[in-house]
Length: 580
Image 1 (cartoon, helix red, strand yellow):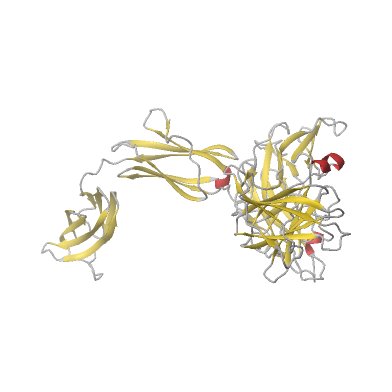
Image 2 (cartoon, helix red, strand yellow):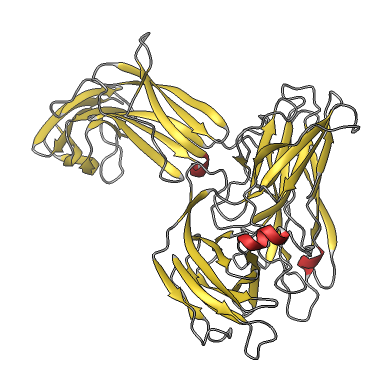
């Protein structure tokens, strides 16, 4: 389903499509302009939430017409891969790029308890509430039976929490509708998944497909189990889902890219294109390459719509052949509504398969369906990407700082889910570089991270590098050079400069251990002139400035002064001279 075709600079046709029977993006190539194609090969596994429609998408029809359900013709636009080729004269000429929306790879929690359905849960007003990590056994009646044909369940999720929903039927296939309540009381449907058994697969090829969902908001969510014909028993599973630290995608649907530099024979690991926090839905991407080899990816995005009722158009740019992508660019100036009041034709029903994108000389043009003025008006809007921000690396800002206890190394993790390993390396002069720590480091999450090298020796100079293994390959930061001062055994003044001074002087204080303290200026009669520092002092060297003014802000008279430090039980003083 959803083929995408390109012609490479060497005259090769390459076609890509979603193979829903194997959950993979497959490719095939032709060397005779489409006369024959080689055997299909897998570009990457496709973690597609086939039953989970984009947040805010509303489709007509019953529960069996999801996004897309691959046994009956879908009404929504499916998640097809998009393919582009680099035809520039740059170093990545001929490279192929594939994009689609992928859910996070991760672990499904085991069942913590089992339950059975109750007689009263056949109404949306009386659902059976489940705890997470519950497997519930139930039976749903046929449509010809006198009582209701649906079972209803609810469960709670916190914002950003992920859940895996699946199960098994013991006779006919069953459809499970997944929904949640909006702020105005309406029900937002997130999609439909199918639960089947081995018999269904053998008889008609129908197989169940679970979904992974990350909550866009804290609240209560609902499941509705239905059968078309026969009374059927089932096992419904509601499990927590923990994304893997090495997964390119973070949540239920992120935009991912793979690239090939050998005409589609082999493909890189997945790279996450968007950089937002988990819990937001991205879908329907498209990709293009300009005449300089710059890669552009555009998609629909709901990071500004916690209730899934509107959508924006976003894009991101890569200057290094799809290895890393720059900041997310919001192309739409206003969000477009995809949910409307009851009895009004839904804007989301009219969205096409994917955003339109084309790239030329040093720019890209993106066009999309925009429903900000629906139902009065619907438009095709566009944006031209000219300002090309630099790539956002998974890890950046590597630095080193000497402490009394060693050397503190710091770095900033921008995309923890794309990082599989970090390792610090150290060298001294012309000596061989050595790996520090007992093994690879794993980032706990995005944000500032620090690590101490306790074996750095005083009086030596070291170079440090940080190795990053991520979905984009192996990269290095550094080297950063640091001179470790001699070990501080006692409180001492290191220097004052300039001395004598006319307007301002800097004094450097060596502190052996953490303690409360102060630094004050006194004249030759012992009268306090100014307080330069007061409070907690950390071990190490600290530079303190005096601007030559007294406590009242006036300029101190020329003459001799003493700068006195008291830290813990130790005290030292230094003489400085102020000249006119």
